[in-house]
Length: 154
Image (cartoon, rainbow, N blue to C red; front, side, top):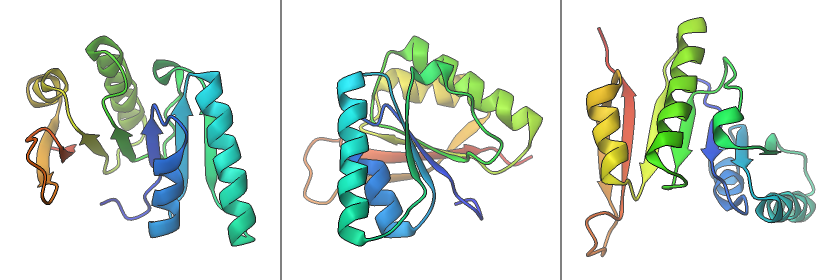
């Protein structure tokens, strides 16, 4: 994992994963969501979480499409729970790579329940390699897993 992770959830829905990741690991999180209803629910979930914790936390949500999100030079952990088509996924990965070219850093891509075409694209069309594959305990569906990719080391 990068030294100073910033966790980006592409297609965050109601924002549960970014809030959980912040609560568990205390790292800045950003959720990207195109659906206005989910975005509003994510903001409400954040308000509720912060109210319960009586705190301020670096959790933010952005209402935009994933391919329009401008990847920042500090963004380095990207989470995807099969949120969109392979065409959009390719564009997002391309945007991540453009950001890397501007500022080289460790970058990790985490796929939960990864579609075959996402895996094929990362394996054969990018400089990312599979670092870890985590199968969930007591799960019979082989697709119910996390795949963590990182940049290939030269």
